[in-house]
Length: 371
Image 1 (spheres, rainbow, N blue to C red):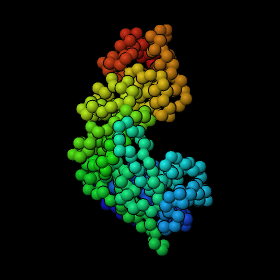
Image 2: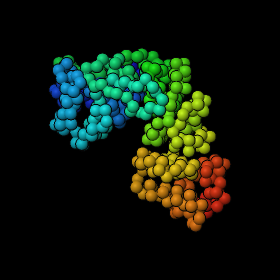
Image 3: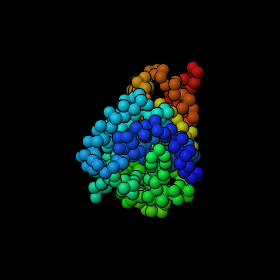
Image 4: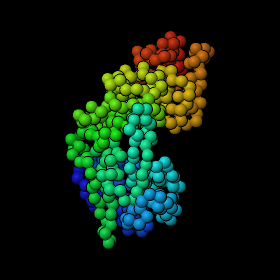
């Protein structure tokens, strides 16, 4: 892991007197890079294409409560006056502003905030909390909402006179955990957001990190019953979908964690850790369809995967043919997925709801003959 070189970081980000950082500073705003981009930079000395920033107030003027939120409301018009931004500034939930930034990177600017969860954590979703926004919240208070210490790192971009500086922000000793490849929670509220369990599993698989003793003790308190398919699909595709499912169900089964219906429906895929880790989204959708996901959930997951319209139609046709008892000729669209089915193998296909019927019908061999 590399140490932070202020000069290299600022150069990589394109920080100078003509940059967006200087433009925002003229309007009393200062940016701090946060989240996974900081972790990636410290590991590899490179920045990803998606960058998340906290946007803070340089002065204390109008930096609290409704006055601060009102200042943020003017942010799109301020950004539009900067010549380096050509795209529309999109307002997302929780006062997050997204736009195509300089250098072909996607920028997200969000206000520092404090999240307060209900005392009862049973059945909470990803956004079941109250928010308090401020432009001058301390870094420890603002970063406490983040899940893990290795994600509670920041790089503050400041300017004194004509000199720009990048300074590492590490209120929870995340650097030590990053060096030791350790996943450690920041706060006991860690378990109140179900997505955090998914992210933790993704980091285990993709980064090879281990869990702290305190996280292991907290895992049984997770409740995934209100988890939506969007976050499941997003985290799974990042990690390698079927190894991710396998690891998730190992944790769920060991600790008796409550699941939403759509995860119960695809439980048959949990024994597939040896499948190739990376499938494209269309192939993942087909495999889940063969596991008999209901139509409503299938359409939702297709939407969340942002599949092209033609793939949605293809999968719905295949779904109708399967639920109709495989009568008549198979949809021509099925041949586009043949490579995916070959990767799975007959033994694994047979474990799916429609797998045995699909094999017995000779559909796969007949499509193979058409190739």
